[in-house]
Structure formats: structure tokens, C-alpha cells
Length: 152
Image 1 (cartoon, one colour):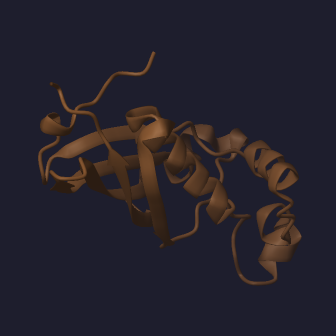
Image 2 (spheres, one colour):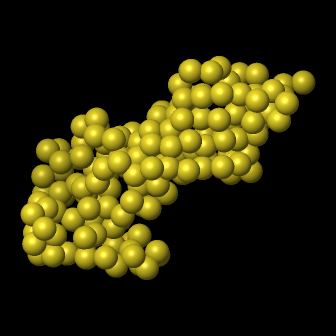
Image 3 (cartoon, helix red, strand yellow):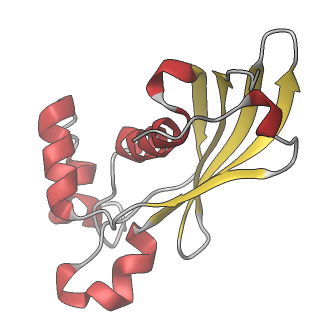
């Protein structure tokens, strides 16, 4: 059940939400490739990535953005979202299932949103968003805006 958020409750500079996703697995990369059509070997072929000196495959940037968007819509509801844009900042490596505890931090995303500004006339709230792994490596930054109802 979606919690109703109100315009008056949003405070500029305050943390609006934090969301921690499940670790990204290689299976998630394959499933996303099938859904999106993004079969770039950077996302599934260990031999290919080794040619570029990379230690392992990387997640699709749009998968990371999709996980971030899920956190946003879980918070504000899809119907309230008015805009969402990001800038990609770093690569995300999947967890190694045979070394889960040692590698889960690099594959687990933490999404944090902060209230950036409020427009009283339109009831639009703009948020800054940042997605990092649990090693504190930034994966993307951006903004989203939402129209929120008044309490009265």
C-alpha cells in the first residue's frame, strides 16, 4: 500500500528516503539484456572484458537507472512523478556468488534522495538523487520532480 506524501511535509535539504536494493547478480544482467536487447559483451562475456583489462563484466547503466527509478516510484508513486534524469558516474560489478560476502558491497546499490526545492504554486518538489554501491562508489546522480497533494 502506497503511503500518501504531502507537499507540506517536504523540507528543503532533508533526506527524503534511502533505499537499499538486492545485490546485482550475473543472472540479473542476463535477464535485463533479454528484456532490453542490450547484449553488449561488456555485460556478459568475461573473456571479452579481460581484453580491456577489466576484472569482470559490468551491469548495464540502464539497469542501475531502473533500480533507481524503482526506489523513486516506491517512494512517491508513479502517478506523481513528473521528471527524472541522471548522469552516469561509475561502473557496477555484479556479486560473485562463490564469494558472496566479499563481493556483495560492490553489487549492492544504496539510493538516497534529498529535497532540493519546492514550488508552492505548482506543488512540485524537486529532489536530488544519488546511487552508490556499499563501498561508497557513486554510480549515478540526478534529479527527479513530483507533484504532491496538499494536506488540506
